[in-house]
Length: 312
Image 1 (cartoon, rainbow, N blue to C red):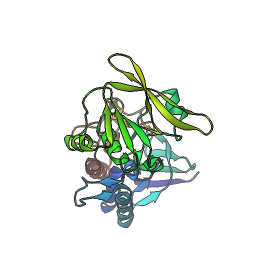
Image 2 (image 1 turned 180 degrees about the vertical axis):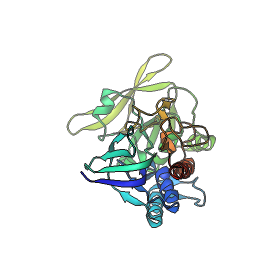
Image 3 (image 1 turned 45 degrees about the horizontal axis):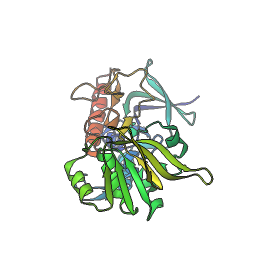
Image 4 (image 1 turned 90 degrees about the vertical axis):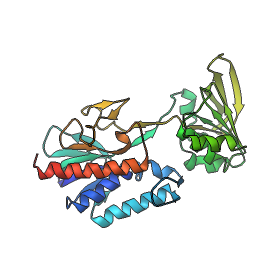
């Protein structure tokens, strides 16, 4: 078995991973970046990004293509593969990939990000890909002129509901409380939009649909105060209840907190294992922004550079 050695191995390819790649390359560390299951991360499933400094508006996928190109231009080797196992009790560290290839590294930067959460209902699972989705930008197009529902009350839910009005005839936003957690500017847009109708104090009880062909016809919701059940006809259901960190790779040996986010030392990207650094949504349960992830990617590369220079 041939091992590919690198000073710095970067796992993940969102803003944190690519920024770490730019900085590690500039530090002459010849990093290797392994893209993971979703090259480009969550921004590849968004459309307009309006809060990336320097771009009044940029398409999420375009921004990630530019970041990847920047990392490559700086000299980072980018591999389309998935890390399935990390060995952290040895030095150098060993990463095994889905392809069977193994990489050794003096330092590792984890930037695996976060993924959409699901409610865990059997009917939700049954109709996934047949009317149930967690990505409006991936699937909204299929519901032109249809009535659809969005489940949730945070930024994700409001952004998805607003985006879906580009296609749908009506969007019902189902939320278990009577106020949203989303940013005020998003709430304003939502309440002004004639196509969106909020449905307060309700939660998804069941997705209803047909068997052949598989398709959603309605959802059953339950009032959180009275327990009363009611049905909303719709062709699409978008689950938008937030994200969970992608920690499958490291949860058994790295310290986590706040529901599974990797814990880093305050003001740094150092994890509970020296030589392993973490950046972006994997560690961040508060801000979860592209720009903060990129900032952490920079910090991780500088932390890794210092770690290697000190020969720890």
